[in-house]
Structures are given as C-alpha cells and as structure tokens.
Image 1 (cartoon, rainbow, N blue to C red):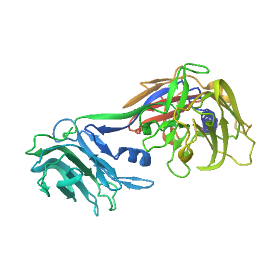
Image 2 (cartoon, rainbow, N blue to C red):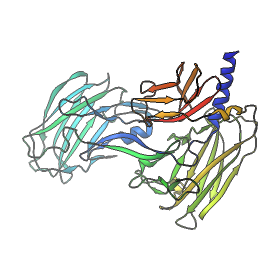
Image 3 (spheres, helix red, strand yellow):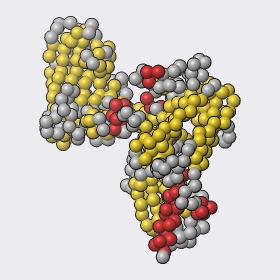
Image 4 (tube, rainbow, N blue to C red):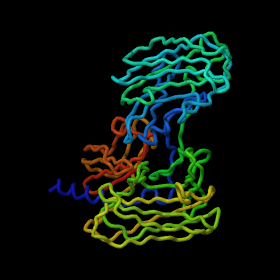
Length: 467
C-alpha cells in the first residue's frame, strides 16, 4: 500500500513539475560558461566543437611541464562526425591558412614540450610557416604519431626556401590532420613553445593566459549569444510588464555572417530540425499567452513566435504567430485545438525577425514577458500541488556540492530525482534524512537542473545550477 501511494505521488509530482514553463517571467538569469580560449591571437576549433558536440576541444589543462597551464588539443566525436582539436595563429579557410601575425626574425628551429596519445591510423601536426608578402619563405612541419605519456622535448629545424626575411608568421597545432580521417580520442598537449635564435617569441607561448567564453542567460531558455559577433542577442531588460525583468531579443550579426535574434525554451540542434526539447507535458495545450513589445527597423519587419508540439522527439505540428510593431505591451495568445495525438513536449521559439537567407534588419527588438499556458483536461490531476513547499538550496549555483534542506518535514523517507534541462532524469536516490547533498559526481555537466523530492505527504521542487 505504501509503495503504491509513493508511486502515485511520483506520478502526480512529475505531472506538476512537467506542466510549468520554467522562468516564464524571466526573473532568473545566470552566467553560462562555454569554454576557455588561449590568449595571443589564437583561432581555435572550440566554437565548431561546441556548436556540433556541446563542448570545446581546445582545453586549458593544468597538466603543464612548468607554470600553471598547457594547451591540450583533442579529437572528439559529434553527430556530424569527428572534430579535431585545432589552434592557429592565422585564419583557416578553403585555400589554407592566411593572415598570421607580424614577424621578421629567422629562427633556426622550433622547440616545445609535448605529450600525446594519437590513435592508430591518425596523425597530429605541429607546423610553423614564415611568409613574405604572402609567399612561404620558411617552414617547420612535423607529423606526430604513437603514444608518449610523459613530456618530451620536441625540436624541429626550419627549412628556408628563400633568402628573404619574413614579414609574418603562421602557427598550426592539430590533434588530427585535415583531409584525413580524424579518430576520436587522439590528443596532444603542448607547452613552452620556443623559437630558437630569434629575438621575438610567440605570444602566450607557455599558454599561461586564457579568457573565458561566457554569456548571461535566462534560466530554462537557450540563445545563440555565444555565436554573436559583437553584442549579445538576448539580454534581460528592466522594461518589464511585471516583476523586475523581461527578455529582450535583438537582431544582431552572428560570427558566420547571418543576422539573428532568437531564443527557445528547448535547445538548438544545428540540423534540419534546428530545435529540440522544450517543456515536458502530459496534457495537450489549450492556450499559450504572453505580453510583448516590438520595435522593427522597417515597416516590412516583423517578429515571430513558433510553438512546436513534439511526440517522441519528432515535431508533430508547429503553429506560427506574427508579432507586428507595438511600442507598448500588447497581450498575445495562441489557441490550440485538442488533438487525438498525445504530445509530450512543447517548444517555444521567439525571433526578432526572419532568420537565414531571408534575414531581416539589424536592430529589430522584441521584448517579451509573462508566459502562461493552459491545458485541456486530462486524467492526471495536480491535487497535490498545494503541497509544494519552499526548500533551501545552498550554494546555488554550485561547483562541487550543493545542500538541499527541507523545512518542517519529519518523514523518514525521501525520494530524490534530478532532471536536466531537456527533462531527462540524470540521478535518483532514496534517503531517510531531510538534508540532501548532491555532488559534482552525480551532476557533473554544467547547466540547469530540476530537483524533485517526494516524501510521504509532500512534493518539493528546486532549480539548481551546476557551474
């Protein structure tokens, strides 16, 4: 009997949890970290790796030969295939690497300390090009294979093809060769790079200096802020309909040249579907409503809201709403017909203008606040929602451990469930104490999580953030 009651609580508790729009009034924001970049003018593969695999592959490692840090390049796997770790001084393109940094010395050789584990049938590369007026006058190019788990001194001489002094230098470090077949798991660690018999050294040649790529984001929502060229596209604003903040979405230029201002309560997939995830639901939606302002740059521009209903990861239907110019807060709603389909996920995507080939004007601004959703009746009820009580979670955000304390509940059985932002359960436990500790061993990926705790008579929930 007790087990059946607990399972009923769990079912109802998850129903209550899944029906709420996370951060629907945009009052909660946090600093999202993506990856570290080495200083010194390096172009890396981190952006490509994060877009395709959700993680960087040029890493600030403490496994240094001396000092605090070294450079680690690793070949990782993504849905589109393997991605080699790459760090350049110069700009890679279809015709090779161009640009570089000014440099006029003629060093004898290149020296570095390296360690590596290059998978079978794969090859890493260390290379330096010296150029004069765009033509190569000197080169070091060394392929690396095999395994070396301890640091060794690497040395390779420059080969000069011209008596001319260089005017620029290009540096290439790669965990797998381009044009080959990169193998997941290949890595190379590089430290203390020296140009021998030269007055000028490479900037940040011991890789001690790094900067963080991070943005401020609304909890429960995902933007393309880290892809923006100069200014973020999605920010919080005090021009709110209610509360302290609303969300401001602006059309800005992205690094790849597109114009976009876009936000979703799910995630971007970077494939033909483009979006995934969202609000987990177990009843079909009846009405979605919110308030908005829209400041277009031209009379031809308009904002857009797209609501996609998923069934088992596949978009079943999408409803679009056009947001016209409105300089004061305007109520907007989308009505849904009840369906024989049982939707399990609702995705909300907002745009400050058209995206892609039909992209609209830079500077369009869409401000939104106070999202609410209503549902058609279902067999699930939320009679226990009155039992949802506040709990204390500290520190939040957390790094190594967070403590969650439940007030005034003297039950001796607590069922703890942790879900990531997609609604996937990542951790569960049973305990007899009302002080719950979650460590970075259970929740180790940085991001937003929902905690659901069920005792004999109550349901508790909390939002936690792993740094």
